[in-house]
Image (cartoon, protein in one colour):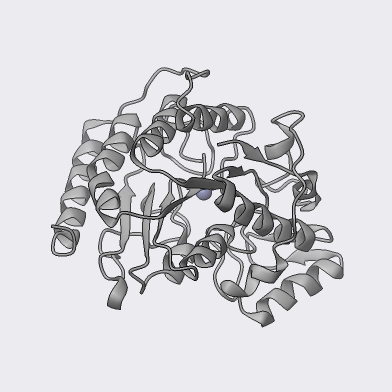
Length: 318
Ligand SMILES: [Zn+2]
């Protein structure tokens, strides 16, 4: 898995916003990949009215399109190439190092720094070709737009690990999908203060369901805001957890691709990202950090939530 990057992603100019271009420039000089626009794929997920709205606000010089999300004159261009890069990554098994992120974006509205839902669009592109897709969303927030879009299908298993409760709301152990999709949404609601041992348990414990689903493709929403020094959340992962997450994915699945979601601590972000890549490529871990654990109350809270989730999923995954 290698990085797919293009400086067009810097044209999404958000100023002093936490989701700003320093996230990518912090990685230094990166090889540039020639990309195709993903504009033709937007309607796989988004309504024509919403697409036009983003385009118009961008062409008019930009502004806020919701309480958290900023659009600049270059944002529409950056966003359609972010979709194109994610589609490309899904065909080459690579990591689309994109901005703006996508997993909060809904059919007809932006949310939480996200404009177009890159991972949902790439997933739907493969579902339309008859593929079963596992979306593994390890950003520290619930990918609310992604979850909602696939909530009633059994072609996509949406598996998210996130702090709960936290922005954007939702993502409890009770939300497991509906209709044909009942049992095909797995929300692992992590208490604030969760460290490495809870996080790795949350992966290992629900991995058998993901394997049983037997996906043709694994689509990873890769966010790094669950690191202990990220200011947007109160999860406590060390750098090692991102390496292990990548390693476990590569040991258990073929055909994996990823796209960037969150991760806002500019000093830690490159280390989180490179550790994840080294894990998934089964190389040696470069950035070691002392592992973290959780307070005993946090662990009990997690165990209770895990038991409830297991109980809710039991009848769908024997
Ligand atoms: Zn996030």
